[in-house]
Structure formats: structure tokens, C-alpha cells
Image 1 (cartoon, rainbow, N blue to C red):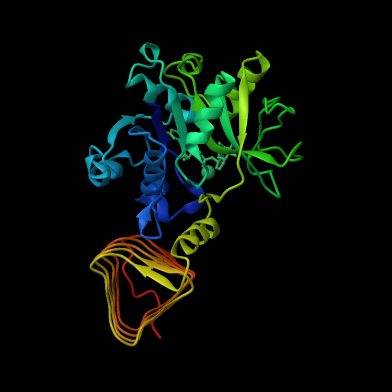
Image 2 (cartoon, protein in one colour; image 1 turned 180 degrees about the vertical axis):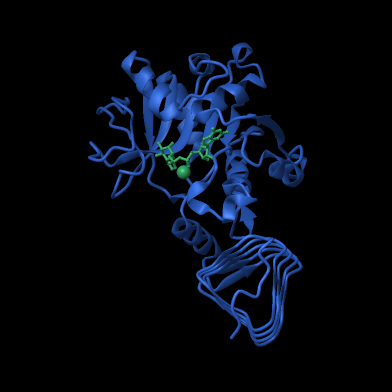
Amino acid sequence: MAIGILLVGGFGTRLKPLTNETPKPMLPVGGLPVTEHQLLAAKKAGINTVILATSYLSEVFTPYFGDGSKWGMKLLYAVEKEPLGTGGAIRNAAAMVGFTNTDEEFVIFNGDVLSKHNIAAQLALHKERGADATLHLIEVADARAFGCVPTDTTGRVKDFLEKMDNPVTNDINAGCYVFSPSVISEIPEGKVISIERETFPQLVKSGRPIYGYREQSYWLDIGTPAALFKGSRDFVGGDFLAGVGTNIAAGSSLTGGTSIGSGSAIGAGCKISNSIIGNGVVVGENCTITDSFILHNSLISANSEIIGKYLSPNENLPISTK
Ligand code: GDD
Ligand code: MG
């Protein structure tokens, strides 16, 4: 069965300071790290072996995911001392399982995407077409921040244009690719390579069979604060969601798709709206928390007012008091 590679080594620059100590894919959405949502999606498609291609803050992943047995999966960790770019990371990760000796396809996931597309159907299309690579494509209103991927009437990819000012199509690279092992050999070893700016354009230019798999299902790149909140609200799907062992004292009101992780405690009389609160967070009485992200193990003193703030665990409050 296909082998998964999760690209989780980026710096998460647009989400600082949240990503100062927590890599972007480990940020919680609806109480679970983004990576966990992706592993569950991979498993649903029958992918049981996944390599996490890590670099920045690589040490944060292993204590949480271990060998993957908790999820009934086999997880491996490929660590880049210096980030190798998306292409270099794929090559480095695939080498862990000896890509030259396998016929298995690789399924590569950008590590910051929540997608409900049918991965098994994407794999099936790849095999049916005898493709070298098959990219999940979706249509967006504004393609400028993405990889633009024009296709012909048969679905064959005609070009790959990363982040253009004047997009030639609204079909974009949704960040999930099926690769035949032969494509991995095309990526130079031990070098910083961008799969989007180097490998894809070269493959297309040299006439390799690269196809698009178009499916317009739920899809979100959580790479900006607004998107992260949206992803969490979408997952909660109601007023709020709280994890195992979280205690919410009487008289508190939780609204706007707020998500609280496990083992946290919310004091009496708090008003929390459209916020993401991690695991093991203690919020004192009568706090107001709106549009804010509070990471794991933070302590918030009673009567704090936190509006539009992103707090890392070491930034214990009070920031401002009522
Ligand atoms: N291991 C590793 N090493 N991972 C990396 C590296 C690296 O050097 N650089 C980036 N990544 C990971 C990031 O952690 C992220 O999960 C993924 O690769 C994509 O990087 P982003 O920085 O999030 O790229 P983007 O959002 O601007 O654009 C990408 O995603 C779009 C869809 O969301 C591109 O693939 C676009 O073509 C695509 O449309
Ligand atoms: Mg991204």
C-alpha cells in the first residue's frame, strides 16, 4: 500500500508567535493537532506507513506521535538538519524506506492542509492513468497565494506556476500529491529543492505524465491566523467543544465555535468566544477571552481580558485586567 510523507518542516512564519515553540502542524484545530487530522485522513485511505519530514522544532512531534501504534499506524521521522525545501524534504524522507527498491506510490501531504477529499480516489486515478504524479486540484476565487495548475481537457497538467500575480487559472495545487517512485529519483539528493518551483515545472516540461485530480470538497490551508480560527470553528461546528478531563465551572459561557483541549480548567463566570485553548490551560474566574489563541499549559489569572491575542505557553498572564 502507498506510503505517506507529511511535510511538516516549515517555519510557520505567518503564525508567529504561536509557532515560536510549536510547529504549525502541531497547533490544535478542534482540539487535535493538524498533523493528527491528516494522519486520520491518510489511514482512512488505507495508508498505514507515514514518514514525518521534519526540520524546524522536529523534537516536538515524537513525544506526541511516537511510533504511531496508538493510531494503528507505523510512523517514521526524517529529520533535516537544515530545511531542504519541499522537494529536498520529500527525497530525504523517501530515502528512509528505500524508494529505489519499491513499486509503492508515495502520497505527499503539505502539513498545514485540512482536506476531506477522497485520497483513495486520487490514488486510483493515478494508477488508471499510469501517471508519474497526480496532484489534487481545487478551484479558488483568488489563486495568487497558491500554485496555479492549468490542465488540458484530459486532466493532464500543462504547467505549474507557483504564486503568480496574474493567475492563468483558478485551479490550484491543493497540497496532496501521488508520486510514482521514479519521480522521487528525479529530485537531486541532499540539496535545497522546491517541488513547486523546480521539480513540477521540470517534469511537465520534459513531457512526463502528470495529472490533476479535481475534487472540490472541504479544504483549508491553516497557514494564517484567520484560516486557523476558521478551521477550528468548522471542526467544532457549534458553540464549543471541550476535550477529555476539561472542567468548565458553572456560569461560564463558551460560544462562537470555541475549542478547548483536554485537561484544562475554566473558572466560573468566564465568557469565551471564537477562541482556541490548548491542553492543560488554567483560566481563572471571570475572564473574558475573545478571538484569541492560548497554547498548552498557559495560566490565565482571574479577571483577565484577552482580546485578539496569541499566547505561547511561556507568556503567562495577566496581560490586562478588567
Ligand atoms: N520538511 C520540510 N522541509 N517541510 C517544509 C519545508 C522544508 O524545508 N518547507 C516547507 N515545508 C512544509 C511546510 O511545513 C508546509 O506544511 C508545506 O511544506 C507547504 O509549505 P507552505 O510554506 O505552507 O507553502 P504555501 O502554503 O505557501 O504553498 C504551498 O501550499 C499551497 C496549498 O496550500 C504550495 O505547495 C502551493 O503550491 C499550494 O497551492
Ligand atoms: Mg501552506
